[in-house]
Length: 271
Image (cartoon, rainbow, N blue to C red; front, side, top):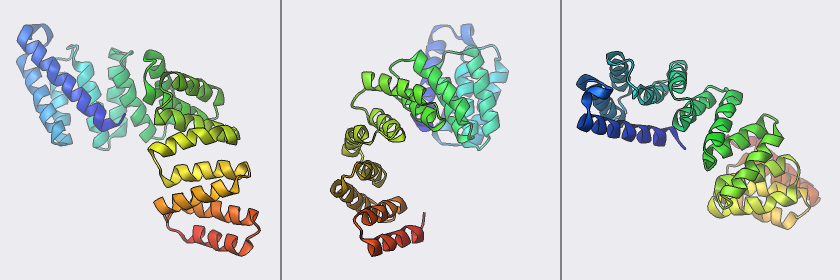
């Protein structure tokens, strides 16, 4: 789930909350100025006018600091501040929102994405694991927890999430990427191949062709590896890794001159 989607979702909730509150009991949740500021913030967010949106959201909170809708405002504020490049302030706003609503999946998702942007992967991974516990059907959180756990060396947790994803969404591309990545990382090349095949059916990118080519190379299936490398280079002729894989393939076929040429191509390609 992207930040843009989350932001749109939150804006819709805020607008819905405003309509509901103003048509029932305007005094129960806040004053008219509070809701007017929220409405202006929504418009500014829709126009990507982040500076104005931040000011309106901050004013709304100061107008009614005890309003229960502030958890939504703080979550929106965090995303707005993130778009302004103020990562630390964004994290502070989302931490406050989490204190108010510790079981809010939306707040946790927003905070996890900002933590990732700040390079704090291990802390973000805790949030993703928490989301997966709160919402057992959340594919995105399970996928992120599986991939981050694998990157951080926790293969047991990665396997746990892969198993859960396989149970709830076996045909999801996230499920198949996570399983393929874990099996490749644990050198279970043959088992990884069917998962990469399912991924390629949905996203035939050079990256995934290359990943499956490695599995074929490691299992001695050179013709299949060659076909994947060719398909990958057709998708992206500038993929450096594919030239490296083809160099390795040519070496295995005792085509040393071709291997050297591919190695040169890999080194000369621009990232």
